[in-house]
Image (cartoon, rainbow, N blue to C red; front, side, top):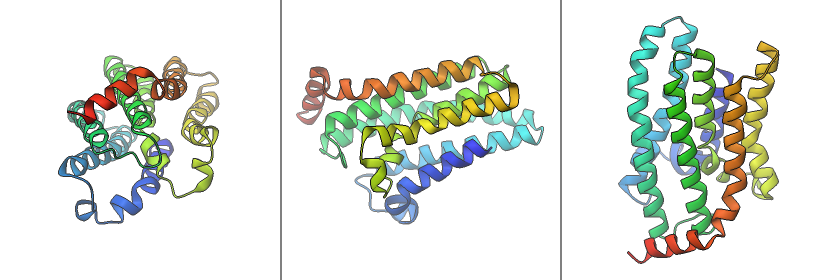
Length: 220
C-alpha cells in the first residue's frame, strides 16, 4: 500500500498546478483528448490502490472482478496515450524538452507499461509477482509527472531525474529483502526492464528515426 500511495503523491505533485488543483475538468488543457488521458491515468492510480486494499481485506473475489476492468482500462490507456503523444508532437508541445525527447520518453514508457501489465495478467495466479509487476508498470509511467515537479533539483540533471524515478525500484528491492530475505524474480526482471528503458530514452530521442517520425507527424 505504501508504494501505491507514494506513486499517488508523485503524480499529484507533478500535475497539481495544471490539473488536480486547477479543477480537473475545468483545467485549461489543450484538448478534450488530454482531459480523457488525464482521467484514464488518474483512474489507474486509484484502481491500483483499490485493488491493494481489496486484497488486504481478503476480498480477492472483488479484486478479480475489478481486475477485468483494470485490463480494459490499461488497454484504453495505451491507445489514448499514443493518441495524446501524436497530438502533442503535432502541436509542438513538449514542456521543458524537445518533441523528439517527448516522443521517446512517452513511447518507451507506454511500451514498458503494456509489457509489464500483460506479464502481470499472465502470472495473476502468483499474487506476489502479480502485485509487483502492476506496481512496476505504474512506476514506468511516472516520467511525465516527475518532469513537471516544481523543484529545480529534479530538472537539474538526468541523474537527479532518473534517480527520483528509480527510487521506487530501490524501495521495492528493499521491501523484498525485508519481507522475504530475497529479491523476487518479478522485481529483478521488471526493474531491469525499467532501467533499460531509462538508458534507451536519450539515444532514441537523438536518433534519426525519432527526428524523422516527429517531423512526419508534424507535417501530416
